[in-house]
Length: 131
Image 1 (cartoon, helix red, strand yellow):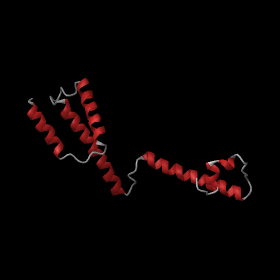
Image 2 (cartoon, rainbow, N blue to C red):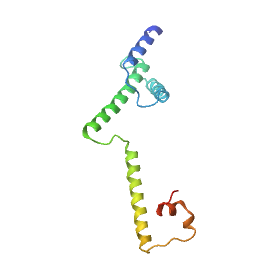
Image 3 (cartoon, rainbow, N blue to C red):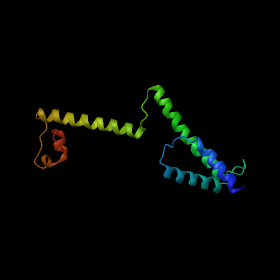
Image 4 (cartoon, rainbow, N blue to C red):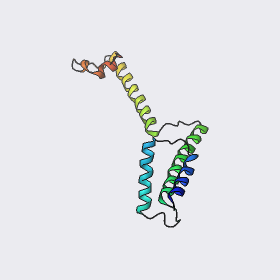
């Protein structure tokens, strides 16, 4: 295949490309690794399609899948945050509840703070002071 035709196909495949979900540098790296993987396993042979076209196609499929998941979540009224961020928020809420329980126990005199603890950020957080 001529370089001109390859360049034409490459440009044609990218003209209607949606905004990538990852940074351009990361996408190039992923796509190059995908191309190398396809080549290494000769996955281009059954279809007779060059590995770079298959890699471009598969990368775009992953991008579109991400868009579809986001659209579905929006339609359902679900959070579009990553599960790790959702867990972080839940953990943050659990920590704040724990601090509140400690504050209540301290006000009731059930627990006391020694001088070493009073020098820590944890103590300042419990006492609602600026850290």
